[in-house]
Image 1 (cartoon, rainbow, N blue to C red):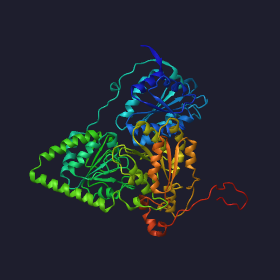
Image 2 (tube, rainbow, N blue to C red):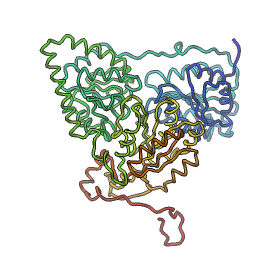
Image 3 (tube, rainbow, N blue to C red):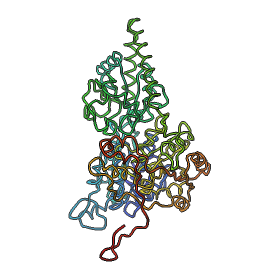
Length: 612
């Protein structure tokens, strides 16, 4: 067996697994690893503007495609930055492979430049940092361990609850020669789905068929497993409403008669009125962890009188709500088996009972449609408002009407996530993507670049806030450098929107209107677009949005659309959080937010000088 460099074996392993992209910044320490990619044109290297952006891009690529991308950073400061880019992947179960290098093994603990071995005083530990945001973090000090490390990395990333893995390579390990041979992935990691316990699946089917008012809650696990066809079939057979979590948005088409939208604090009124104990007797909750936002901080009446919970991770089942039946398994596999059992049960129903079932099913469907009409499901008045400044609900509606059915829309954190979650109607899986667990500001700015690389033939639009955009706006330059035509729609309220609105209402915890550090000097996004060689356009009226989007896509360039929205428009979910204070101070409902003058003075110029 011929010898080869460990670094070359690493890149061979990535190619063997079908990895197509490496995102990152090559510092001197990690240069030997980057050098190995030179001979592999099938793996594109994308130079990012920041290591955090590299992690977010690899994350976005996996969210859109289900395929692993790699990211890499150099020892010390580069590694610390990269770790901050893995939090969303870790919390949202996205497989990302992150590489760093360390100093040569003979320098461990000597206090040299960028020593990140964790040996000795004042030496940081890459592994210590990354282990908090990955399924596995390992420092490789022996070249002969590299083959097993690579095999184990993919096995850990892609089995069970998926997630990121970090490999830290001592620099001398990358250059060392080893005896190694590639193996087919099927030889070292399982690829089959986990099927649920047959006895429990039968019990779940019995509960659903015998339920009076069953319902389904679909989470991100349904999208991850590609289980939407089975979900639609089961819901249709049962005639039951389907609500999704924010992470599951799109797993069930939101224009379907049985869809009640997103459940939770910032979700749809129809879903929140349906998925509760006094309205649902049996709830099938599949691929969801009963998140805080989904359950409006774990209210007691949430979900249904009896819950069937399905998840790949046994630790999630029963974690937040007691269950009647808990099934450990892949969403698609469990739904397939559940369909078989439900159909078998129904085939054995006496004609009279079957007639009652069908009549009850039709009655439920009529009730769902009536409730959707009553609660203005995707037809809320604000979505049709011509007001200036623009209502964000109308802005999101205009974006939806312009885009194709298969477009991918991302949302960042804060108010813009609330607007898109509730007012952007998603019609297919992976049509809406967001960092739902960690909610990192700026995540979508960079992640959307990875999404577009994963789905080059689909429109990719990122809806973000002005403050979120400036967090990682530098990555626009990455998109223009590689001609990756993402469109960023900035819902610009000139503030830290959700934060300043919280201060207006005192967060429901202290007196209102104590504003501090929530208004920034908003940049000229059009000049910024020009500086980054991107297309830019300012929009101040809702009727201008579709034209701006057409111009952006026609340009063929990465594009920035600055959409000026009403800073005083508060998401209904936020008002619900502060309803006690709103009742106490009703004048806050119509009171406008303050505006600031820039630039501000930050230096004292005399004994009585005030800081403005």
